Image 1 (tube, rainbow, N blue to C red):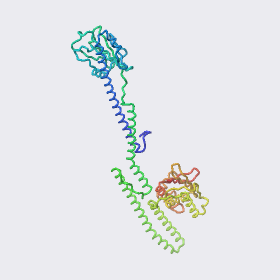
Image 2 (tube, rainbow, N blue to C red; image 1 turned 45 degrees about the vertical axis):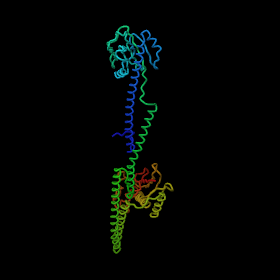
Image 3 (cartoon, one colour; image 1 turned 60 degrees about the vertical axis):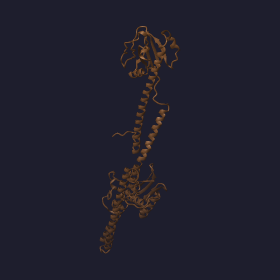
Image 4 (cartoon, one colour; image 1 turned 30 degrees about the vertical axis):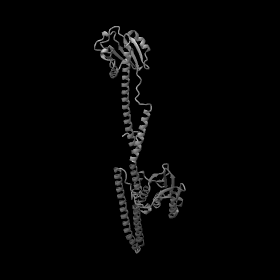
Length: 478
């Protein structure tokens, strides 16, 4: 599925974007409806005003004799933009018929008096000059009073879109004059005032900001749940999630706390079982060692004691692997370079012949939060692994760009096949198939190290160096 480049990745931003988009669409639709309604109202007001002015001007012209009408028109005080003209035929020019709705509005606004007062025009032609936004109304005035029918007619004639004009039969006899009014049509303004649109935009932006704020407040418990899950992944003894908020959030928090309690109980039960097994095994192993001392055959006695020592070490390693998943030691601020130097010094004391093969490169001080003894055990396991397979070890410590501390433990051995770089972190998995202590142990050193580092919010990965040898890269949060 193709993802939109501007589509947010977080749930809060996606929800806020959807709500804001819907709000903007609804606001624009409301604005369009309001604007169209305002346009209709203004057109109605313009038509009624034009109709009343047409009626008033027509009655004024009809109130004087025909020979005085031209003089009256010249001195008549007209509204701005209005023009009057007398002619023997209606001037059509480059005009178009007006829509039927406008003709109906004009007709409703015209009032020429009672039908029998003989002032009604014989015929009316309404045209529109769209480029000039000018309404042209031509009224045919009766020539003599006794030629008018008792039943006066009022008619608005024109053409619909794309059709030729339709003329009313009562065009009048020759000699009848046409009074033409040119009425300007000001452009309609859909807004109440110049500040209406700005106020509308401000209102929309305010509503959008409130929607974003409310969305983030509603999504905040989800982030809290995510942080709690991350903390539980680092430490099974992390504090429980606070159960407050909406009903669904409270239910999710309760389920999460139940799950965390079950995980803690499982780890505690496993640790208890391993401790019990280890305690029960140590006693018979000790008895067997004592009995082995009474064996007369020196070679057999030596081999039996070596097997018992290996069995005891295997039990201790298994207990350590189970115990490291349930670390009770509190987190403290410790100096990682000092811890690394201490581990190197202890390795030199245990292996004096490795003095020239152990090196440290990095800052003198770099504080991190962690548990001292578990971290020391993890780094020691990685160092021992480098010495066992590479014959040397160099610890490099640096601060990476993402705010994490990086520790590289490098050796000069043969390296690791790429397909085995993850497999060696499984319990009891080794590159060398035996379980001999001389060739590397029981395959629990790397799993123990990864468990400890992940419990601190970090990790360890293996890679091969270009110069030769392997590198165990450790990352820890500052």
